[in-house]
Image: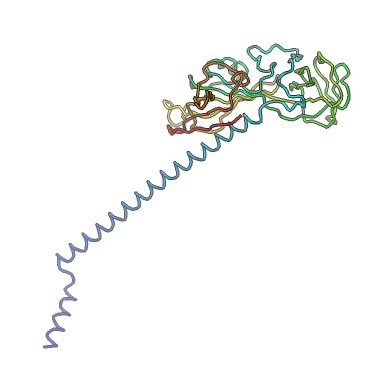
Length: 308
């Protein structure tokens, strides 16, 4: 009997799987493979979405910090302040549509459509941007470096207390309690401690008075055509920078940023409302305590409230 059972088992082993057993095995294998593929693609999609969300959040944080730093650090470090003085243009240049350079405001906000000609004209050959109209811009006076006068200026010469890496064509602000004279560098001596001006200051300045280099920066939304698809445009947060009489430069800071909108806080008793800025306005004229900056990154909305 045992010999007969062993013979049947051996015969079954030699014969192999039946057709039904083989089909069942193949079906189970196919199900396992399909499940594995589905799990792989699901995991890949989840990873890609998580990565995209993380990239957006990182871009949003970078964008918020750019705006915060630009607004909080804007202006000149005059020891008497820089808002109440009378500003005098002694650069020997007449900057068309650039009265912001020659007034006490450190920050101006408006619609990009108001200043596209100004930007394009000062960029020289560096053109070709597509501006996102009906969005805001932020313009700031950005202090690059400063020192004080080592002694009273004589004619066209400014003696500096410390050496500075300034160059011909740079704009400087000379500041005392009553005036801020905007002057232009003609040359600087080899030890960087004496500046020669194109035109002498209009007012009297003394030892210890502020002298600093500044530039004009504008943050705005513009776009270029996608190199892979000429019908598609890519919006980005751009910065425009103009140092003195040199040609301006503009370049993207954060890709994917669009729909920049700036509003300011209005407080009436206990009620807080936000009002959009629809025309060029100096921040000092708003007398507000906070700005709300909103924008989109790939159609996702972000905002940042900055206390002033």
